[in-house]
Length: 126
Image (cartoon, rainbow, N blue to C red; front, side, top):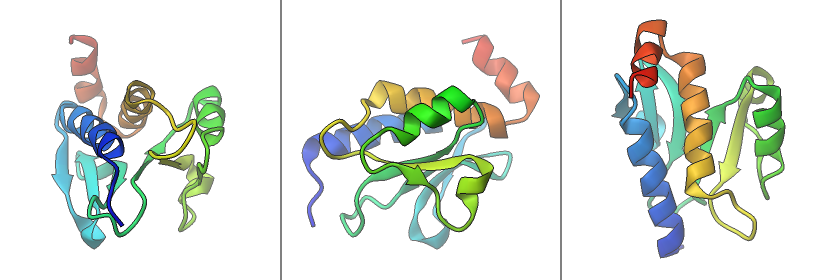
């Protein structure tokens, strides 16, 4: 399965944004790209090899953002019990899929939930 160029560009934009957060690092547990801060995952970026549809999984504590994310076509609470803790998987492809800017807003919210206060303070200085 090949990944459409627009979907890949959106994924790359979101990945670049996530890795630009203060203290963010990319790791590949389970063969999947994740962005971590302080050794904790704040966004699951999935795999980009086309073996699975592109999507991101973020932790959204804000009720309005969480509800909004779940209205995206194909979005669902994350598996492995993570959905109960506010994690949402959002596909990047398909009609009505969120724009990269909105996905980046959700990545930032997820970061703010996970990151230590000293790094969150750096965000405000940007």
